[in-house]
Amino acid sequence: MVEKIHTLRNKFEKRIYGNLKTYRIKGKIEDFGYETERIPYVLAGHYIPDFIIETELGKVYVECKGYLRPEDKRKLIAVKKQHPELDLRLLFYADNPKNIKWAIKNGIKFAIHKIPREWLHGL
Image 1 (cartoon, rainbow, N blue to C red):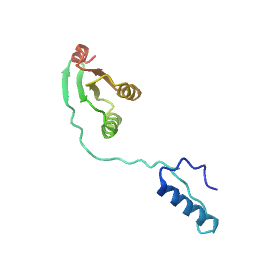
Image 2: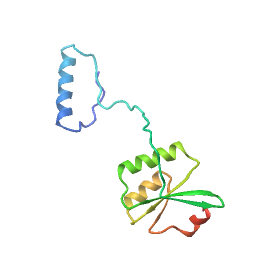
Image 3: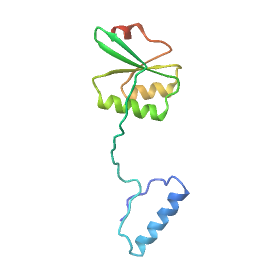
């Protein structure tokens, strides 16, 4: 039996869903699912932080962002996940609630407009 279908994203997917349903009824396929599995993958790349501050507690990596694009979010999460030992921080150009919420959700320290003095000491 087909699992509960999430909202199909566009007309093309709706058309294909209808085709698959028809095939299943005619006995050509037993079952199918729509977005029922997540398959992990890793993209290789290099992250070059904007600034690296050497402190008595270690390095602080600062990424300056005016606009936090989806690809930036993906990259920062991947770096943080693969290098949890790095002290990665965001410096936002503007006080954008969406960016702040994202940084908090992902456990990334952040500041707005300028680097706080405590960052210079690794705090």
